[in-house]
Every structure is written in structure tokens, then in C-alpha cells.
Image (cartoon, rainbow, N blue to C red):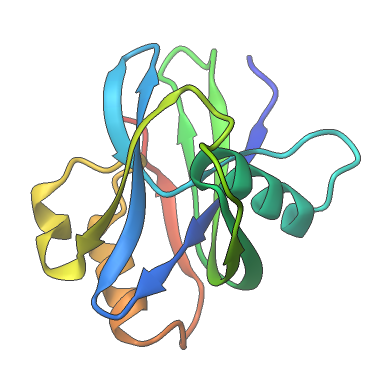
Length: 146
């Protein structure tokens, strides 16, 4: 059984759009919220700032936790704990982002999220939490492995 790995992600909204990144992974390319793994000794907020900066070039300030989920592979060889935080854009770094795994960054209309295969699959929950402006309780997804 794999040790759980914590992944933080940012819910960055601009009006009726949300920022997503397209990444190349071991199982192909997929869209997801910008973010990544928490390193040993790193706070969740510091990890979120670092990962968003590396993937998008944006500087952000983490807000409240909105979505909690996990992805456990059927064989138990992968176990991810997903923590999705609302975040506020505070600036942008000049030049290209550092992370070469990211193939594309795009502001998607909230109305089109249902058309995307997001990883983890959280489109409906994202719509709900974004429509409420980040207010409300934490949404717990359970195991989202597909």
C-alpha cells in the first residue's frame, strides 16, 4: 500500500471563468486545477503558492478550504489526498512558468466545466462552490479514482 500523498490546488476565479491547466501525466493528458504535491516540512499555504507559481507564473494568496477528496487506486499503489482552496491572484511573474509538465493554461467559463473531464472529477462541486463565491461548507468527495 502506498503512503498517502497530499496535493493542494487553487480555485482561481476571474468573473465567470476559472483557471485550469492541462498536464501530461502517466495516463495521458488531462485538465485540473493548478497545484501539486506538498513537500516535507512545507505548509499547505506555502505549497499552494509555490505550485501555482511554478505552473502558471501567478502569485496567489490562499483562502479557505473548499473541496476535500482523495483518489485511491484499486490496487492501492497510489493514494492522493486532494485539498482545493479558494485563492486570490496577487501578481504575476514575468517569463514562462517553470513546470514543463503543464501543456496549457486556460481560463475556462464556469458554464463549460461540465464538458471537461477534470482530474479529480470535481466539475459539479467546482461549479457549486464558485457560484456561491467561495462561501459555504467544505465539500467532501470521498474516493474519486477513475
